[in-house]
Amino acid sequence: MDFIAYLLNRYRTMIAKIHDPVMVTLWKLGLGRLFNLWPAVFGNHLIVKHSDHKNGTPNYSPIHYLESDSMIYFAINQGVNSEWVQNIVANPQLEVWLPDGWFAGQADVVELPADRLPLLRSNFKSNPISARIAGIEPELEDQDFDLAVEDYVLIRVVRQSPRTGVNGPGGLAWLWPFILMFLLGLRPRKRR
View (cartoon, rainbow, N blue to C red):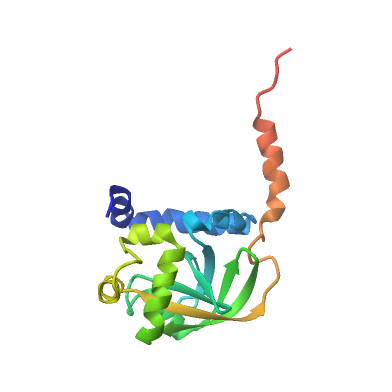
C-alpha cells in the first residue's frame, strides 16, 4: 500500500466526516455529474440515502458503484455487523442518486460466493481509486482475492421507481444565481 493510501486509511473517519457532507452538498447543488467525468481514473460515484436502523433518521453516503445488468452494486468494507449493513437489513428501501437520475430502490446483501467474488472484482476494476485506497489488487488469483475482500459486503440495489422533487440531486441549484452574484461582487474593481 502506498503512502497516500496509508494516510487515507489511517484518517478514514476524520476524512469521512468532512468528505461525505461536502459530496452530498455538491450533488444537491447539481454538480454530481462532475464526479463521474473520468471514471477510468476516479471511478463511478453515487449518493445513497438510507435510514438509520435505530431511529429512522436519513443518512446520505457517497460511495463508488458498479452498474451491471441494470442493477447497482457497491461494496462496504466494514463487515456484516457494520451500521451500513444493519441499516439496509432493517430497512432495505433506499434512494440512489446517479448522474443520470434519482430513483427509489430495494437493497439486499449478495451472499453467494459465486456471485459475490466476480462482482466485487468488477467493482474494484471499475473503481481504481477505491481499490488503491483499500490496497486491493483486482487481478489477484481467486483465493488471494477472496482473502483480501473477506470483510467486504456487497450490496445489490434493484431500481424500483424514478423520483422527482426538490429533496434530491440538484435540489439546491436555485442557489447558483446568488452564488454567482456574490462571487462577482468579490472581484477586484478598477480604480479611477
